[in-house]
Image: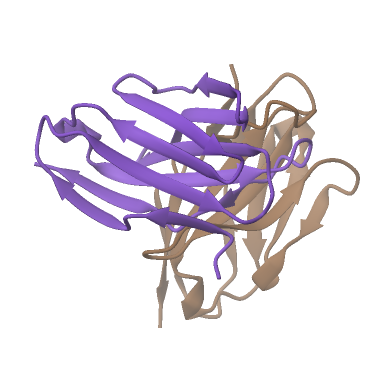
Length: 115
Length: 112
């Protein structure tokens, strides 16, 4: 069965520091992978997605993620964190064809940014 | 205006009451979803619908029902609410083959 694991429940970084949020997935075929962000009181907003091709994908708000098939990982990175990045981040996987339309979400990682 | 709207945004209800959460979308998508979010558990799929005549159970459908009144409207009902249904509920939409989903702002439901 498909699954997504985000090993870090809570991460605190200083403003201006770099960030990496980890995501590991379990899926037999080529996955469609996503990172979403949820700001307090808001719905989920798509940061970036990987379907195929270049394994380093760029997203909005200066985020990027790298797909590593050998490690079954899709980690999210940002070189310099801003206070407005404090939020909860979710990694998700869909099946490779995208036809099921269903997403499996990780447990989420809460990011706190220190001034 | 938001592409995916949910009403109400907050609701407090008592055990045993019937409650309906509504979702509307202007994206023109055929596919719609209902999720619940609980702390530490991420989002879990309750029901999904690929068109008006196609409704499917998700991971945690027990205690819930849905109605797809039109392409743009998808409602979630709790027939007899219980306290462990206290959660944040999200509606989402997607296009076939795109994979990504577009989320509403959520409904915070508290069952006392």
